[in-house]
Length: 331
Image (cartoon, rainbow, N blue to C red; front, side, top):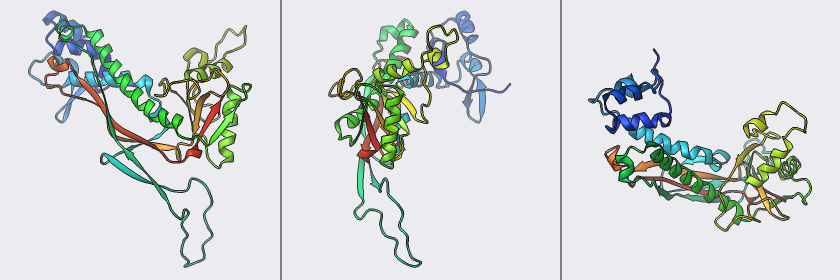
């Protein structure tokens, strides 16, 4: 049978109880049955069924470490926004300098053998500096001793969520505090799809492409109303069933639940005149996230006992490139 390796967060409870010695032989056999028979784990140059590893006391598998990490990442996934909207570049060190070329314009006609002119006489550069963001999973020794698996997994997922929200807020703070050159003002009338269409047109007029939309919950609610079927329809559309909007006008939509450091309202809200509810960006020109170290866990040697005080961290930075590559949609 082909062995498959997959996300272990779904099997956190049986792995935790068995690996931590919280189950007797009878309960261990029952817990092992909850894990798919084809779920495998890489040991050396071969893949071994996880069921077999959990029933063997002789193999140090590292299963609990992976289950812990997968649970943290699982908690971060619902909050993922900015890492999906912007380019994410791996950083070779704590700082990375990026040369910024012209975002628009035309190539020059050049005679054979002639010097090719520079697009920008004095090209600019931007530096991405990585900073550390960390959080502690609040897990007590008593929770471990009593094998309070759901609570422990909840704390791990919550730590992952807070870490991802830190990334979202760093980028959002830049969007809301830096000068946004381009705006599309709905004048409190064309608030839904029409506002997105207007923003796309505005960016196209600036010779830029609107590729991704970062929206606040209030802006998403306005869009959702336009996908709600009229009264009397018995078959609801996919958007109403799933809550997922997908692409609209060719633009990727990203919901951001983070709140700017300076507060919400005019900076990131969509309930009153002059509030900015969403930012349409050109992914290739707006800015980039530098990722020095993605989500990781530190400071635990024993996979069970040292979960107390576990720290999860990331090292990343963000910088903008072209202010004109961001269009604020104003209420």
